[in-house]
Structure formats: C-alpha cells, structure tokens
Length: 99
Image 1 (tube, rainbow, N blue to C red):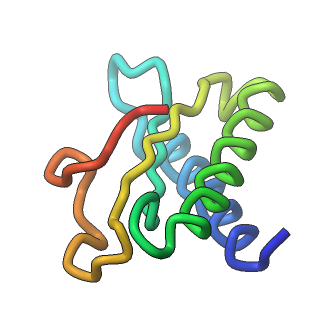
Image 2 (image 1 turned 180 degrees about the horizontal axis):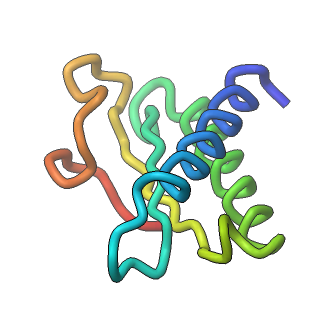
C-alpha cells in the first residue's frame, strides 16, 4: 500500500474516533467522515487509490461494529488537484457526495 494512502487512511480513522468521542450530534445515526482528493483531472489515479483505501477502512470499521456502536459514512470530495478547492467544507464545495 502506498504510504500516502496508508497515512490518509490512518488520518480518516483518527478523525472518526475524535468525532465519535467529542462531536456526537444529538440525533445522528452515522458518523460522517470526509476525504478529498483529485478524483478527476490528471491526478485521478492517486485520488481513486485514496478513495478506495478510505472506503475499505470505513467498510472494515463498520464490519467490526463501527465506532462506539455507530456506523461510519464516508463522503468523498473532488478537489481535482486544484489548490483553491482544497480545505473547503463538503457543503460549500462542488463534487462532494456520500458514498
């Protein structure tokens, strides 16, 4: 596994655990975690690898019972390797979709 994909997956798990411990919304069933990368354009191959790794991590965590009994839901964003699109929230960015 590419070290960057592994690092992104570890980061995704860390965010999920942090949200589960400290950010429990009152009526939410799922814990939403987000990942962004170049899903289109010239770097799409790397973005697909990152997306696949994140999806597998979420699937593995959910198969093991989730986080504190709650399932994770992954949202993938496409920044198309454009710096100005990085770091934007899913609700304010085009290209975000629940997976």
